[in-house]
Every structure is written in structure tokens, then in C-alpha cells.
Image (cartoon, rainbow, N blue to C red; front, side, top):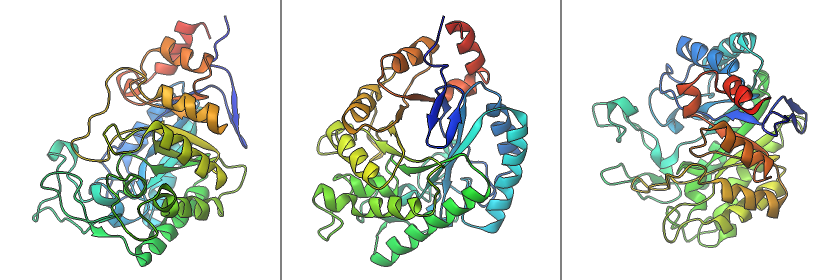
Length: 343
């Protein structure tokens, strides 16, 4: 029996043994952005999970671009040295390749860790100022972000480029731009969070201007044989927000900037937005992007069973399947999936 999920895949210069990807999962356990022994154990475990590719959690390009005090960063020499140490050991633990997702949290930054409440940091919790496309809070009782200026855009673009260079020095096999989940770039893309009246707001092209400038700047420093992709929002799941039609247009625009693959996620534009709950709810959007844009795609969203992942790849709806929580539940999910599928 042959398995599509366990067939090899080539993404620019990256050779992968199968189509299984471990999605980035925030651990909220870093020390001022620095990876530590928690990350060593977590990523070392996933390196031998049976997945061909493991994406390190959202890693922030600025100290004030982190979601929480415990989020990873790649904005300092200390961050780089700490993550390099972890990756050196994790690679020795298993055969998986490693990617990294780089991000700026925008108006969702300065937040509590989940086990502390997941709300905005209080005055006694060392909060910091946040920035966003428009001065609109992410949810009720959240801080009001400052509207991004041209100077902010230049600084953030430079921070993404610097983080990408650090990631290359650490020898990550791929780099992914986090353009989803209500963070800074997605905040510009969505008409729900972007109410600007200048050249960065209003029309689709205007709302894409800043995110595309980040993609363009990072692509300029990432060699062509290192895959550079983006996780985008397939739908805001609310009236007046981004739709699957927009996801196709976003993917097409990013492809025009040299992006090599698109990962389809969704939701997160506001604190009260709720995603669908059926397994694979992003798969139809990924299928549209793959077919209409002609770019390699992967999808995420409550995909937990080997047979479901197999069907997604076999039917051509996505080239790769990203999964997260099932790998925490079963750290050898890939091995068990291979047995189930006869691979």
C-alpha cells in the first residue's frame, strides 16, 4: 500500500521525507525571548515524532512585538545564541527538518500567559506599548494600540530582515512569515482592524502594501534555495472581514513577491471571533489557493486522524498537512500514522 501522506516532497532546495508538518505552538516559556531547556526538551521530542518538518513557535522580531513575557524572540545576540544551542541539540535528537515562524504581535502583544488569564497585562505586570494598523483594541478591556507610523514600518521591516538573517545563521531549513491570527501584518490586511484613510488603508491593494513590503524585504536576504513562506488568514469568520476570495488574492500577491509556499490558517482578528469547530475547516480554502494561485500549500485546523490527513493530500487539496495538538497528545504521531496507513 502506498501513502500520499508519506510520499517525499521537495520545496525549492528543501527535501522532505513526507508531507507531515508540526505547526508552530507557542510555549510561553522563554526568558526575555531566549529559548531554554524547556524548548530543548519540547523540540527534541518533536524532532523524532515522524514529521518531516517541525516549525518553531512564533518567534518575535522585536522585544515589544512579543505576545507575552514568555514568548520567543530573535531580536538580540542572546536570543540567537540560546536558540542556536537548542537547535543544535534538537537536530541530533531526530531526523526532522526545522523551520521557524517570525512574527510581530501588533495589538495582541503585551498579554498575559494563558495560565495567568490570557488578558492584557495589568499595570503591575510590566506591560508595554503596542502598535497596530489603527488605534483599535483587540477586545473589550484591552489596551488601545498606537497607530503605526512610517517610521514604525521601517523599523519593523528591518526587524523582520534582521530576524531572518539570524535564522539563516542558525541554519533553519525554512522561514515562515506570520501574517495571520490578528497579529500586526494580518491587522493591516483585514478591513475589520484597518480603518486607515492613507495609502495603507481602504482598498485591498492599500491594506496589502505594508505586509508585502515585509515579504519583499525578507525575500531579498533569504537565498532562493531556502523556502520562504507565509501563514495567512483564510477567513476572518465574521461579516465585513477577509474571505476565502481574499485569501486567494493575498496568496497571489505574496507569490508575486517571491514567496514559495502558503500555510492556510484563519480567525483571530478580534477577541470575540470564534472559528468553526469541524475537523479540517481550513482545507477548502487551502484547496482554492492551491488550484487558483498555483503555489504549494499546507493547511492547519483540527486535523488529528491519519486517514483525514491522507485524504487531504491524496485529493490534492493541499501539498502538506500541519498539525499541532495531536503531537502533544501523541509525540510519536507520525510513526503511528505510518503504521495505520501501511507506510
